[in-house]
Amino acid sequence: MFASLGYRCLLLAALILATPTMCAAKTILVFGDSLSAGYGIRQDAAWPALLGKRLQDRKLDYSVVNASISGETSSGGRARIDAALAKHSPQIVIVALGANDGLRGLPLTQLRDNLGAIVASAQQRQAKVLLVGQRVPPNYGSYAEQFHMTFAEVARARKVTLVDFLLDGVATQAQLFQADNLHPTAEAQPLLLDNVWRGLAPLLK
Image 1 (cartoon, one colour):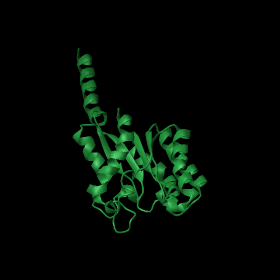
Image 2 (cartoon, rainbow, N blue to C red):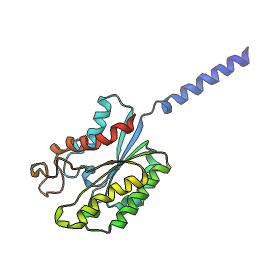
Image 3 (cartoon, helix red, strand yellow):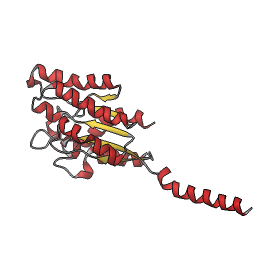
Image 4 (cartoon, rainbow, N blue to C red):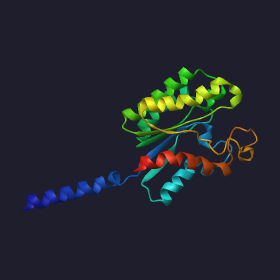
């Protein structure tokens, strides 16, 4: 009898100790550049912060970690992805890199390899991945279209969901950009979130 009582007490203690971990919110890691880091605007106005609010409003058990860095290239992202994955153990990774590669005209083979490696690292840790496509201005010539196609190629190769273009519906509206004509204003952030959400929502189920 006493042994049985002791066993039940140990089982109850184990369940109590396990509860915080079992109930912990799952993590979405946003891994991007200045377009996701909220450059030039309040951090709580950037689309990753708005994503956190939307998840909370819809009572979805996810928290958002924004590991985006202004000026980041795909090479920089590749160098730090493993540390970010180890630190945050995300269930979903939103990869929103490549814009700076494109603006600098860096080789597309390099972009493809880096994005592929970032996605593969996340998949190896059992995380779902959402790849966010980017574009460069048409005056980049044939490079512009090939650059955009690179994201689709990586998504197909790694079998992950693709958002065609982060700035869809924003890129052609000058009033939605800051004075540098590169970074969206706070008013544009809900549109960016809606673009991401279309690809993200199915992954939350």
